[in-house]
Length: 455
Figure 1: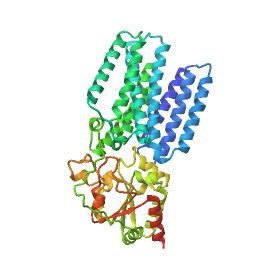
Figure 2: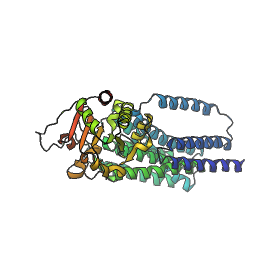
Figure 3: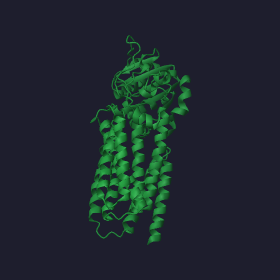
């Protein structure tokens, strides 16, 4: 039986790795998810058989409840709320690891080896931080908590003090693992620290925060695997943790910021707009004006943003793109790494509208093409096309790579208002002479453009 379990775990590990590799491309992402689901099923079945569980009552109850919640969330949660759901699931994953480790402590009645004590402390601490930190991220994304950073005096000192208390409690627990008071203290300290670490982070940095918390949930799972001596849990947790770190690094590069800067930088702490000239004027155009420009264009680059998801305009936008292609116009999508509110959000949104992957281009592949493009069509995007990221050293966006929409001959922006993006920074692009601002709901504006182009 042990050989069969070992082979099952090995097969599951291979499938997890293949699934993760497939997630690197939108074309193979669905297959990657399928492989990962099969791997998880094999791992669960093998674990249940390996432990020779006699009574499956609570397992079946948990399976029914969890499956019901999962299926309901998958079917009912809108694309705009997907980041909140991911943040919540990250928290639940971290919390599960922490409480499983705590349960194992009570099962072993405090008789722990040195290495198990270390693993238990890591699992409990990282898992609890992930739990409360993810709940705060969920609250910010959902609007329950204000998305702007919450800062106060001596905040960093308080965080350092709390972390020091964790180290002291951890050392004492390792010396005397029979005293569960210190383990419970670590749990409480970690939950408080998770809140304090995320509340000073603004909405503009949420994509990175979600990615980082996802990595932490994997680290907590791996540590719990060491506590339980479960190889597949160690492997799964390590894969999630490592991939989360890599993704976080990619997101940081896309924003030209470091993880410490994101955690302590408090981007968006104020809603002050950087308006150098209060006398600037925005020229408002109609859908008729925009359709005339699109009709005579030979090349168009579409830049989708979070506003597209809010308006649920992805289907209308794809119909507009098909209409333009049928007219003989060369059309492509430009996808910024932090478009939307979580990594890959925009890709998933467009995949929902059956957008061909061949039409999608990353920032690095398409940025040099804007200068030879007739029209840059911006739908619901803001910070990712803000020129102040290149020119204004006082802007919190300074240094962040942006899509060079302002280099196109004409820029058409479909937006509800002049409100700034998550960073709270006013967009200089709105005021340029080449920019055509078409105000209104993105879905309605695009549908009107389609009707005008087809007449």
